[in-house]
Image (cartoon, rainbow, N blue to C red):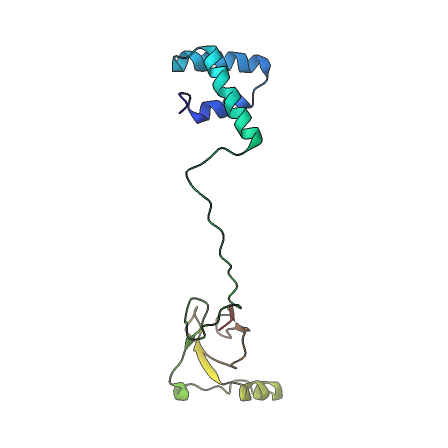
Length: 144
């Protein structure tokens, strides 16, 4: 193991010749080593960093995919699934009297609750679906 802290070695790596000589002398007096030992340690670190990365104790994690299109479980209610309303009889779904609104209301087969304001929303069973809450204007995309 190195007697010189890694921070000091990193500082030495970026210096030019004259500044490096002065810094090596300073580090040598601070650590109680000779200038030749500090130079040898610096050379070994530079040789190791040019060929490969310095080993670290922490291994990076592979990022998990956020897409859920490949999932096969339909019953798993996670963060990306809506909160379903079980008793829809107390809610009205005819709030848009236009022809397009009535057409959309015929497609309603499920009732969910907005995750932001808890307003009940009627939606078709098509997935993925982008829903914009008429109460709070929050946009949500459900893939289940």
